[in-house]
Image 1 (cartoon, helix red, strand yellow):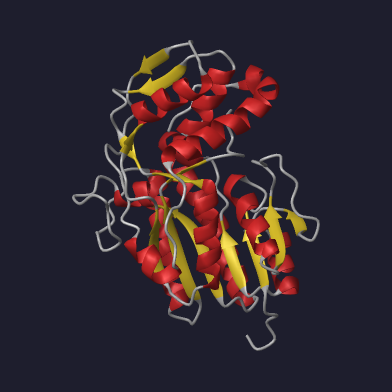
Image 2 (tube, one colour):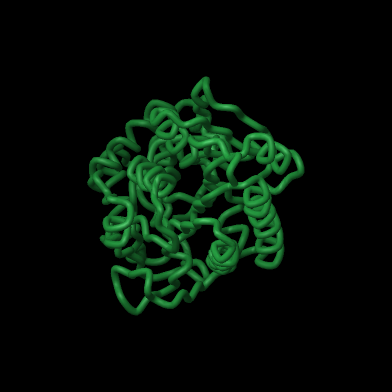
Length: 323
């Protein structure tokens, strides 16, 4: 690793929702950044001019060659394929495809002399229905979905390369929301609900709406991710607020913020859904010097304002979506 160039970070999925926020912070911090992204889920915000972009998937031969040439000090892996819904419909295919991509990318980074790997995992999906809330990292993982199982597999693979001298951090994000999230897809209750309400359509709640999540604002998540890049720690770290918020409260808050009169539509609950989730983020405070700074109402207001500015462009493409 002696010929590794300091200050060089590769971000896989860096053109997406969370990725663009992370990349902007890395560039502001004076780091040289390579973004590897297949642009299947771009957020529509241009990357900083100084950033090199490779349009490819993280596990591709092109990505492998780019990592060998770029020789990053750190790899940040934020790419996702399909999400929770695809994992529910096609569990075997989801796990096979996503693991092949991510493990291939981790191996390529290791071969290129990368000293650290930081990945986006999922606190809600990995813990399942935890017996303790907010859930600390010491809890035994018990995923209830293929999505959670795949995230846990990624974490397990990281543990193997950690034994070979690579520092690894799995950031177990809560439910990340905020500007630039796709409001026309299948995942992200805040973005989807805001988009529907601003288009004059009803919000959708699955089940009774009392299922809870730990909603954490994207700019706070980006700060935690950059802190992880700069940290010397290794292992799993929760990135959340420590607070439970029901889906119904989120929807009601967005109805109030948007002034919508379209109403709320109820649909059947989905199989395998976690009932309650909140993450104990005290390790993040100790290890990364991080804690969430944005209140839920401030975050929802900023998010609603963002989608209001884009409402005419997305009004015709809204979907029911899920949290």
